[in-house]
Image 1: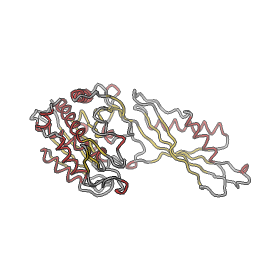
Image 2: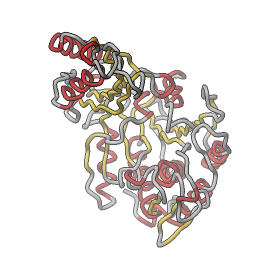
Image 3: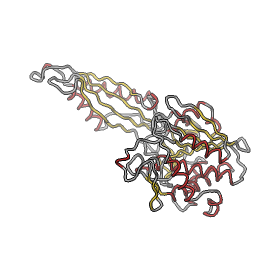
Image 4: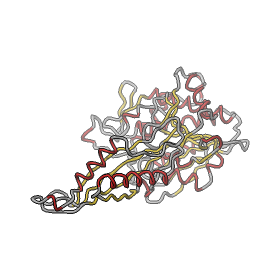
Length: 405
């Protein structure tokens, strides 16, 4: 791990982190809105000496930005993956304007400070440190920043489509882990609408109808009791999970027994599970409830998520992968104790780049790590310690130099 003096010589410092993050947070880049954030990213990457490429992202007004620095050999490369879009902010709710970054006691406040502009700045400083080290690099170095990390994940999929992933050994995925957690396992996600179909009737004569609400109540109870047996996959980090997230009737309210009631279920699936297996498990569950009830009929429909995807596939990296070990060593050298585990924030776009490798794990090794407290992402008065941003840059740089040595 680089010493503090070496980090400063490489351009990594709290002062530099503050300068860059102030500039970046001051550029509004709400997902779906037109922004100049990609131009700021382009300028920073060119300063590092990277060749910069822009790729249009379907349905977005802003391109994906890719910085490329070829190596001195043809070994596996390293990719920094960070999105520059943010969620919305309502200035009236904040203590300070979310688009005018405010620093107090070494902490920077502003929209995107945690998710994910603080990590972008750490990655930029790390990439510069790698270049400025003068070390020969065994493989290419990339820094990718896209405009739909909050919704859609189209940008990361482009890395697969243009063949970048074939040159990668490690992907650093930018999310807040307090510079301690090394997150390597990601669940598959699918969302389902289940409809209970009954028969309408006048409320004064309910015996002539089949109340879809009471029938759906049986399903919700069965889900809560764990009767929906989902595929278990082969992950050591995740168990399958299902939650009921919404209920509505059709027609809603009024002076009639409802003939239809919809429920929305979110299903998290461990690595090794497939969408076909999830679908089969749900179908078996619905048929069993129909047999038990004798009156109701259930229908199911999978609902599209970001960019129309029906399935965000799971991914899991080998805990013994070179990237995992390099990052663990760099974290320890910084005086922290790394904790390898699963990603708790749902899903990250970098999983789009993962595919089946040897030994039952996915490649390239995709590792989520970064400064900040994840619980502050998307919140009012979102903030991040600047010292943590600089520390993350040093950790990233040390791990990347190790991998490319």
